[in-house]
Length: 275
Image (cartoon, rainbow, N blue to C red; front, side):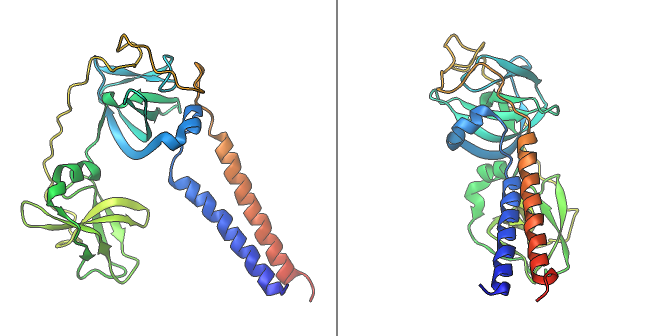
């Protein structure tokens, strides 16, 4: 085989390995035995929630089918939830972790989503059109602002890397300002830009309803909230299921090391050996 073809194939292999490492880093997958056994039944939600337990707190359990508590979390605290599992009683459970990497499953009836782009869509979906387009007068090198939702308190700068900037759907607010939704751009997901004034960081802040619904006193099948026994799920044991992330770190290190080794060999083979 021609030496240049060999080198090309080796470089392509390196790119594939690197891509697999990056792709694995995009979505956080819990290092949890229940999740690993039931990942196909788990829904990726990728949202931040406020604790809204009955009585001011809620318990986090080893698994949706377990009565063993992992920790107790307090109302008004916020937690990121990556995946949600729905049991046979239609109770939804979200995986949470604290700052000490203690993790487990919490009933979603005791968690309330922080207002975000998805909340905005659910509230205003009848006024959002599928009309997409290009933000006018924006080109490569310009800096514009992205917003969690139209008029959100949170905004961030975006440097335009192409000759134009596209959006997928459109919303017109009460003041007649036009907003475009962007699914993904340079690591930022599901955000909005003001089509009329994309470079203005001082747009009016939208008032949103921050009232949190009252938490239910009981949830069917959830330990200590109901007289029903917790659901028994095959393969679930009454032992702690939270594992160290060291396994994933080691795997990434091995892949990166392999990539470096293959690349080094390719360079040596092409440039180092006498022809």
